[in-house]
Amino acid sequence: MQVHSSWNDGFLKLVFEVQSPGNLVDAAGKSMRRFEANFEIDSQVAIGLHPDQLGLAALLCVGPYARKILLDWGVSDEFSWAVKTSLGVEIGPARSDVPKRRTMHNSRPGLAFSGGVDSLAAGLVMPDEFLGVFLDRIQVDSTSSSLYKSEAALSAVDAMRSFGWDVEVVRTDLEHVRSPVGFPWNLSHGWDASATVGLVLLANEKSLNSVGTGTIMESAYGLDHLVWRDYADCVHGMWNPVFEAVSLELFQPVVGVSEVGTSKIVRDAGLDDVASPCVRGTLGQSCMRCVKCFRKSLLQGALTGNWPTEVDLEQFRSSRSVVSALASPLVHHYGVYAWALERYSGKSPSLLELKSRFFRIPMDWSFLEAWNPDSSRTWPERYRRKALEKLNRYLDPYSSSQRMVPKELKLGLVGQLPMHDSWG
Image 1 (cartoon, one colour):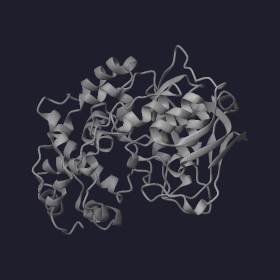
Image 2 (image 1 turned 45 degrees about the vertical axis):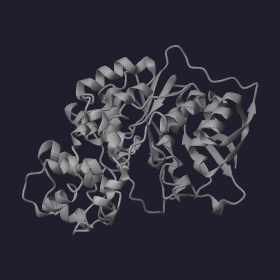
Image 3 (image 1 turned 90 degrees about the horizontal axis):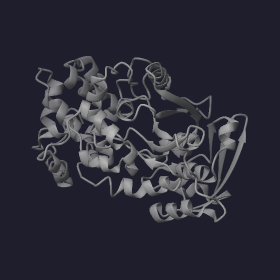
């Protein structure tokens, strides 16, 4: 695959040239449908880009679809080697006269900010001087319909700016490169790597030395599939060398925190009303039809006592995405459902039926209320002490007995799941 770059009318354009466009499918079966990505950045930012920054941005756009990427600019030997050895992707041309990108003395961390609960929790744990970057999805065809809405997320950006956070917005059509629409490197790879592309492009202009996301334990450690993997060795071990080659360390502040924990952090910080709903929701109102809204409504019920009404539950029950998710042999975020429903003591037949489903696996899910201290060894050393102080204000670290519980999860447990009921 060849990549060409240009800047015009306020946008950095990356064009991807391939010989057989119809055959580009990633390991998860997602196809490449669009062969360019545009990013709205100032000319000063574009001029100041290091070649490796631009190379990493291209990799984050099309890496899952290419084993060899030929750029129309040269990158450093160190960056090219890191990508090859860590990801198995050849990227070049590598040139010995391209020096490694260096960070400034007063550099700071960056966070790919989505406006959601996990992202807010990550920002609350990061050092105060961090920069947040929100990628605002551009519709590529004004005549096409889309369920995506950015109003709530942009409102969260404004709200956190009023709280003193430094948050930038980068408009981009990156997510249209993939079909279905979404980040090319996404949570199926352990974290939303492509979400950091805005941080990568602004790294020089905003003096960044690290990048992170709101990736949580369920995704990073594989708990959403009821199986444990060591994030430090697998996901972090694979990606950190690539970013370090561009002088950007990976800093995932809530990677050892479950969705239960991030919800508690945001609630304790008084930011429940700030967190944006799903990408289909509007300002102050979730769509109440997708599986994310369903799971979040159960979490909020467990935390506040305000459980979804029968009207809400009937709407969820009629949702194809909710029924499909619950009918899957591997229910994503199984532990989150179990933890929340364990706390339900009402009389709703719908919730009681659901509760019985998630209690077929005998497990103590209380570890989801704490955080995994082993995850802190993946944080940049310069920020570790401060982040530990902040995170420990909200959650307790695992006890000695809790440390082993997540690691004992096995795929074989799925065989104990109940048969289909009225939920799917």
